[in-house]
Image 1: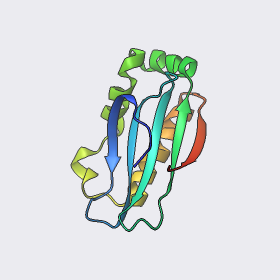
Image 2 (image 1 turned 90 degrees about the horizontal axis):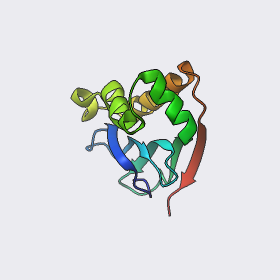
Image 3 (image 1 turned 60 degrees about the horizontal axis):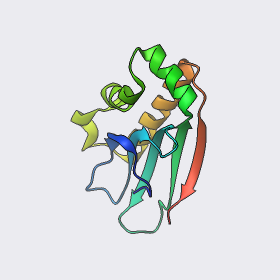
Image 4 (image 1 turned 45 degrees about the horizontal axis):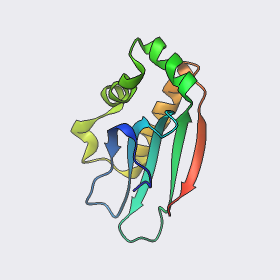
Length: 124
């Protein structure tokens, strides 16, 4: 899983736990108060999935997004969870479906003309 915890963290999607490889998506705020969307691959065998990807929306851009969505800044994680969480499918998803949701989230940000930075990190 990922290395850092987020403030107001919300779960968006996960792959089926019975699969050997999978991925999770979470959203929330980091220590710098930026809105973060994390795609964290996992691998029970421990062979791969040692990197994860995060989209970082700086605080000022997150405020713009919240305004466009007519919610408070601190409601963004709940708003994203409501919009992108397919909890009825979540326990049956395969990795590529979780990755597709991550892409859908990034496309949503672009639709609202919200700038974000993609970072790829290695696990510690």
